[in-house]
Image 1 (tube, rainbow over the protein chains, first blue to last red):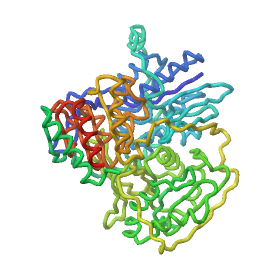
Image 2: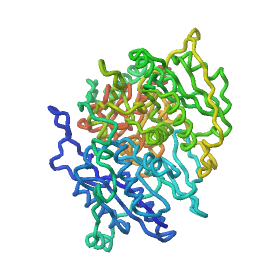
Image 3: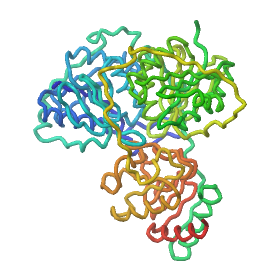
Image 4: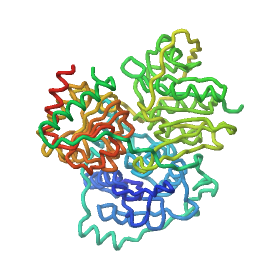
Amino acid sequence: MRIIIPIKQVPETSNVRMDESTGTMVREGVESIINPLDLYAIEAGVQLKEEHGGSATVLTMGPPSAEKALREAIAMGCDEAILITGKEFAGSDTWATAYTLSSAIGKLGAYDIILAGERATDGDTGQVGPEISSFLDIPLAAYVSSIIEITDGKATVERLLEDGYETLRVELPALLTVVKEINFPRLPTLGGKKKAKEAEIPVWSRGILEIQEGELGLKGSPTRVDKIFTPKVLRDGMMLKAHDEQSAQNAAKEIVKFIKEKNLLQ
Amino acid sequence: MSSKGVWTISEWGEDRIKTISFELLTRARPLADKLNTELSSVLIGRGLEDETARELIYRGADKIYVVDDKNLESFIVENYSAVLTALILKHKPEIVVAGATTMGRTLLPHVAVKVNAGLTADCTSLDIEEGSGNLLQVRPAIGGNIMARIKTPEKRPQMATVRPKTIRPAQRDEKRQGVIIRERFGNEIIDSRVERVGHRKLDTGGAEIQDADIVVSGGAGLKKGDNFKIIQELAKTLGGAVGGSRNAVDRGWISYPHQVGLSGKTVTPKLYIAVGISGSIQHLAGMKTSEHIIAINNDPDAPIFKVADFGVVGDLFEIIPLIYEALKEAM
């Protein structure tokens, strides 16, 4: 079974600091990591490989430093990696990103399944996975929480929707985007780390992908970021301290009063 | 033919039009008015009566495209995408908006590729730029730390998904008039490679968190799984749904469908009550657009208080029972 896993390198956002004057993120000292939601796709791929045999190829489009994310994926059990890099890719929106990744996947030859994270924690669009399936014209199952079985060239999966779980059977090759519930991503092993360190990672550019310049990066992106601003997040909230019985009782009463005033009591 | 008209993609399920469809009409009506054009809505499903479609007219649409087919009973992205792609190519709308639901966030990317259009995800505000007439799409990014305004200068249609529950559903006005157009398709829209095998409802023990007006969430401050009962009972008393922080989910105190935050769900209820949740950036990203926020935590410096309208610093095990008592008196 040939498994392909497109991933993204993102800034570690648990300690995001914003420059209030410019409204942009302070990038200095911020570590780059594999998009946390992509770890579930990598783990799902490695598990499928363990069960069915075959290989897992991980690929990313990003700056040269994104190679680190690819090596981490190899350390988790992926077999090979491809880095798509070059300044002509900069400024890609989801459409152009999906187009580039689809072209790269097309170059890889036959495959059975593409696994992607539900979305990236920086852009937070969740669009690239479905867009790749549309470009490649292969079946899509989004929000997959469980791969029930893969038999006779079909995958039976469960998807997590707003109101429940839907079971879908899709013919392979297919693209699945996976949610956190699907597994617990493993940590890299010592052997994996050694393999990752030694791995040769081919670098692909526009020429190899045979994409016209006008179809990628900013030029190939239908959408444009027009303005960035900082949202109003702080509310002038009332604060009460409940340090003894009386103040706790008062706080409880005030909360209920607040709920009542907002007409939220049924 | 140049592109013209504003479209919303309505959602249908369990014999009713979902509320998000009416929210989209609230969003899109002023866009159509500013552009001096028609507002249409697309309704795809099975067993769709004129009476059902008319509901969308009462809520603000001028024209409804109904696609009713036995093969379109459930949402299968390939089939719905084939239908919507054909409709867009035929009628050439300039704007298409859908809900940022599991359906909208799957369908619109699929269609955007087919019709070669720009798509912006999970918008919290839409407007028309004076002069150019371009759609201005505002959305949170990087965990809600920044807001980005996005334009699609050339490609048409301009497509966007809109975060649910960020605007009131359009009001009903039975005097409104409109046109219902039934569009028919053959079997070419059916992708035989995909089959829906089944569906099981979530056992939420109450409302779904993305649909609820009130969400009560618990976090690490609850100390152990058994204590999550406190959250469940409070939610039940208030008629709300139960949520949890990533911490609570990772410790197995509550299941993943209840997780609020960047790696879980984004909720926008009328009231969000955070109990024993310190408020990591990731958690705040999933709840800070709630209409009202109450936080209870023993750490006065917890970031959750920065986004709260009402904060109580204290021991949740002491305060929650007192809230019950006060609630009982008030109800």
